[in-house]
Length: 341
Image 1: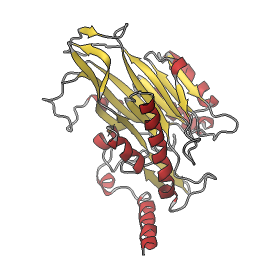
Image 2: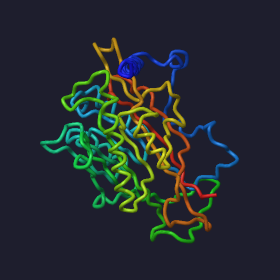
Image 3: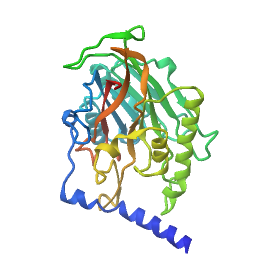
Image 4: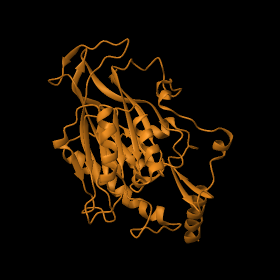
């Protein structure tokens, strides 16, 4: 009986991916970079202090094969560089993507970039990159491989520190009483790509997502263990989690004190990934891409004798890139650095 129930759950979970959420049929979702500035109804305006500065972060799995398709790569590049994000986190990059990205990155003042490419024996989807308009200590970027501890883990994680200049927002004043040498605030960001819900040979069955979920959970647990061991707080974790809002890895991070911007700001009816079957006759729709943050005090930086913390003030999935781009969609979040009350 238990086996039948598990099989039924797998069938329901799989079939749900083929049918748009009923709300999506009644009310289409639209989001552009301009919408980041719109006040969110989930925030209590009276209790939210004026941000000292804001940071826009984009996470996007660009699809390693799309670099070779002129139409797809043009639309992906447009999504990236029209987003207005100051920090861009990419998954599935490769040398072709690096060549395409660098020219526009320099022109748009993304002075700090780092690309990790898969080696000859690695899986081709294992590349990742960060493009930043803010100072990035490239020499201290870490690529964390979990495959030695987590059986079935296939992609490394990128860990980096970004130095955010404290540029006052309108209506705020900054008086530093205890800062780093240049007055900047350092945030630590993880660019993550967890185990895909497919078998190692690329095949997938009704139960593959369920059977690979423990791998993603263990990847996250190992990452948190290493972070705690090194006494390093990760402020933002973003990327392709290859699972939905309520799945195991996300739940574990929430138990560790993180919040999910997608869950907080984007309707459950909106997917971040589409996979075509038979052209576009059938499309699998999933919420695989997420941006999580931790609102602990950021560093020793103090403003008017108050500690600083990070808060997500809005998030959305950029519209217009559901088809003929990557199979994933770009997720854009705005973070505010505020004084801790």
